[in-house]
Length: 418
Image (cartoon, rainbow, N blue to C red; front, side, top):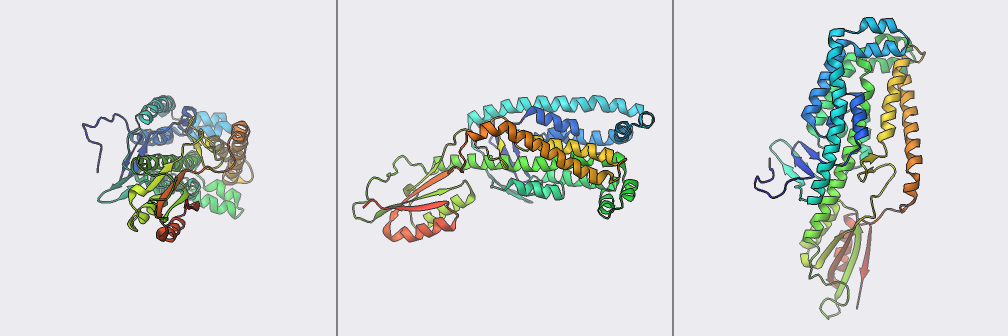
């Protein structure tokens, strides 16, 4: 596994890619991280890529919660059965639970602020990141992925979105934890009875002590997979921009001001691309056809502020996500719906789903309203990310033209200055 040289002058890196995952610094909202720790101690630390601490807090919370019967006490308290809540709590374990619970919230908030400072310093240092790592058992590399794909796979099974992002330890942990919680709570059987309309059977079979962990773990997995995909996409854009600047912005490149050699054969082809591996595939394919590296100019465009795309961008400018609040409220309302579902007709599964829809809709409405003014100042169309200018002969024009389109150029135009 390749690591930075010990004598390197670089003090901070924004990311490290190993064969088993990507550990990355990124601006995050400390309040959102603290909220995830509030839902489930350890979740906030996992979101920060502080995995070892997160795993310990997560497992500790799950174990002590089970021993102290905290979830049962919550259920009885919210449904007005206060004496039962008192009777069910194990005093010798609850006093272990409380300090660790509040420590997890406080520490995740503190770590977020400190890591935001580290990210700012690392970004200013602007050190290169190795985007490809191959090991004996796994290959990992930077690439662009669709955030909604990660969220959707995690919605089907927590952890699958992390597998898509090549975060193998995080993915395995999420899958194993959710399987344990799901089987111990009889989640799938309860879903089966609910969708058959047998609500009383669903209530009877659910183990509430384990079941009330489901909303926190489930929605955390969705939010984490979505957010990490966006962060990795930003890392890919940043690294590719540095690559183009280093290799394809030659100071001696002849800009389109006349023919290439006075023979009347010189032409330029201008194309636009998104940051992606297709861009580099196009450039290397063109070079393999005999066009010199010095005749290719690749310019990554600076963005005007931070682009806000309503449903697929996390705003690194302030560490906020368009989906942070909606998913947090979806988890909260789903938990409340599940609790009251034990005394309502439709049962905890259906009321948990209703709570999810209400919470997500409310959170999204709030975010849309609060960000509307800012969004109205942004351009409605997607900005060009990379401009590629290729100097070639007339005889090479069709070949270059076809290669650019084949590799998903957004636009291609011939510029003939004869």
